[in-house]
Image 1 (tube, rainbow, N blue to C red):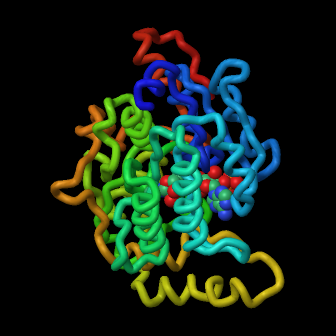
Image 2: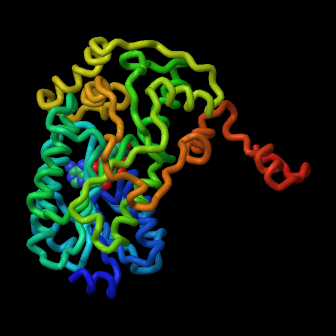
Image 3: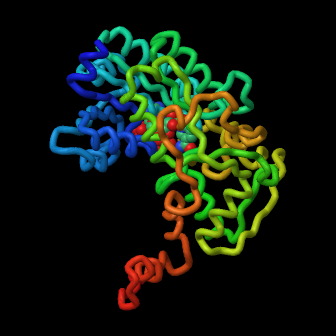
Length: 346
Ligand SMILES: NC(=O)c1ccc[n+]([C@@H]2O[C@H](COP(=O)([O-])OP(=O)(O)OC[C@H]3O[C@@H](n4cnc5c(N)ncnc54)[C@H](OP(=O)(O)O)[C@@H]3O)[C@@H](O)[C@H]2O)c1
């Protein structure tokens, strides 16, 4: 079966491809010539940016419903690889942490095993996934990993740290908040240590794990960036890049929880959807109460022949759009081209 996979190439169904990490995974799979099936549940807008990443017919969007087993079976019917990127860091009226991060993963693994022709199953979990985590999301992720390995023991588990990149949900939000309010709240004083990672490196790790001779099967990889940051260090990097004076308000955990709690309490009690939590997400605040770093003996990027990028520089350059007056590339272009007569773009 593995030989067949090597000869005929990869046909991958990527669940959760419409999200942040998804676009980079699809792009890298398409670049190496694989066919990519993209199950989606929203409207056409949710997937159309992905079609441009491959040749005509290479990226195939397929409408599906995560609660309809038959539609999932159809989405994986012609594949030999399944990648599960489905996840969500907040709950809604319709979907809880358990269903999205655990039960859906389990269901995909069961269906993939029954299929018989799925050679590789990649489950994207999260760094810090543990049954004893203070975060309900990370507990659900841990349960998801366990169920996936029970159903599909050869699955590869990827545990990325906080993802950084153009569409990220941390630096963009901080920059927007700082621009709007003139300061950034630091939960717990910003002393929690994290190991944020460039999204493109995580996508490369996923794709590289498919290229090996099966050595990554049944293994768990912890994918953290090369540097450990405190939340405050990362905020400093953001302020430096957007060229704003760093102003912080220290927010003790009990106060941050008090601000975030009403949404969670009202979620299933009011007859209408509540706004998406951004800077004050109760579960994320709870997750910040402990450091989240790659464990000492964990398999990581090096085992997949990848050297992760440092965040300072290209990976965080997207933040220039938050600078006063917009990005100013003029001097950089002139310097690179060694010419004084290159007109600035702004
Ligand atoms: N972003 C991070 O910093 C980070 C860090 C560690 C781990 N991770 C994990 O990495 C994976 C990808 O992350 P991401 O940042 O790309 O997430 P994302 O941008 O939120 O995308 C999540 C994907 O999951 C799908 N999804 C969410 N809820 C769903 C539901 N109820 N039913 C069906 N599909 C659903 C979304 O589909 P729709 O587009 O239809 O909503 C989307 O395609 C997730 O498992 C996440 O937990 C992310």
